[in-house]
Structures are given as C-alpha cells and as structure tokens.
Image 1 (cartoon, rainbow, N blue to C red):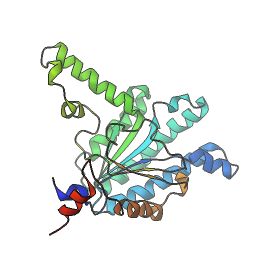
Image 2: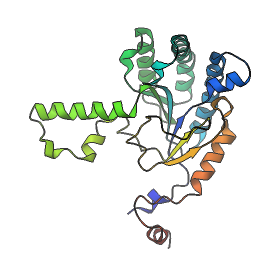
Image 3: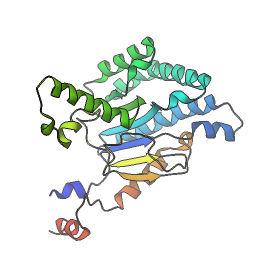
Image 4: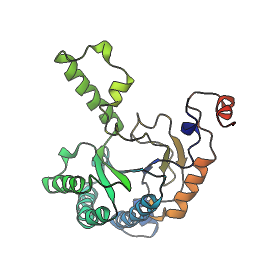
Length: 250
C-alpha cells in the first residue's frame, strides 16, 4: 500500500463537465450560442492554469456527449461549427505551449473536415509534455465500456482469449483512457449533481466537486477552490482511516 496514493498534494488528473453555457446566455437575454462562445474562453483560462501547474498531468473536458445530438438541430450545428473553428484557432497555440491534445469518443459521427482537424491536432501535439488535454466528443461512458467489451469478444471469437481470462485489468486496457492516470478530481459546474455518462469506469474512486458556477464564469480562482476542497479530503480506496493515518506516521 503506497502512501502517495492516499496523500496526493494536488490532483494529477482533473476531469470537468462544463455545464451552464446556455443558462449563462439566457440569464443575459442572449442567444444560447453566445454562451457557448463564452465557454470557449473559460476553457482557455482553465487549460492555461493546468498547463502551468506542475502537479497536473491531465485535464479531461466533456465537450459533447453522445446524448447531446438530441438537442435542437440548430444548436448542434452551431456547436459543430464552433468546435471546428476553435480547433483551427487553438491547435498551434496548444502546440506552442507544449500541450498534448487527445480526443475520446466516436468521431465517425462528425463530418470529414472536423475529423481531419481532430487528427491533425493529435498528430501535431502528440509529443508534447506540459499537459495532456483530453476532449471527450461524441463520448459516453457506456459506449466506452461497450466498445471495450466488443474488442474483448472479438479476441475470444478468434481464440486469442478465453472468456475466463477476462478481468478488470484487461477490460481497462481497452478503454479510452487506459494509458492515463484515473481522474483524482471530478468537477461539474452549473449546479447539477450527476455524472451524465462521463468516463463512468474511470470515476470509480474519484473525488467529486459540484459548484453552482456556470461554466463561462468558472475561472482559475474557482478551480483553485475545487483543488483546495480536494486537498482537504482523505482518500481511502477501501482502507480504513486508521490504516491511512498510519501510513503518514514516520
């Protein structure tokens, strides 16, 4: 049992559901699209903070869920255009700041231009080391686990595996974030208190933090408050508090 696991000075991996863009705009009697544009500015602010924070290795952002296709068609269209134009304007900036960009989710649903831009961003930044920025797009936690199970089933069908060989470690190896540390801190803005099908497997032992702040207003100070909350908690991973306290004793 390693003491480091229980006493992280700060989260290595922060995962965020960026909720509240539409409500932010509606409160100002503005079109919802204005809120989405304001949300992009908040993303820049948080990415900048995490890239400069030496203890933060990964920032995962839920940009577009597999359920978001159910929104009004005009809003989905606006989001797709914003996604593309943001990538066009930000990839070079991310690269120049040594940030590695990755996407998780089923990108085949996006048009070809967007798919190509996603691939371009990943290829250009793949060797960067200051921060791994994970963008979940057309992603769902259930989809992630389903595609992992399908890949394992294919290996069983070919005789490479027996069903009895499959365990948690093997399933994890086929999930989207298998090569990255699991999230230490999960944040949801906008006042809702649910995970909305975001990286369900990976959140098993993550610390949750919910805030009423709408995403466009979520800034570096708000993130620092969430991290302060994280630092005040005792992470147990199934052990007792006394066992963990003993690890901290010289």
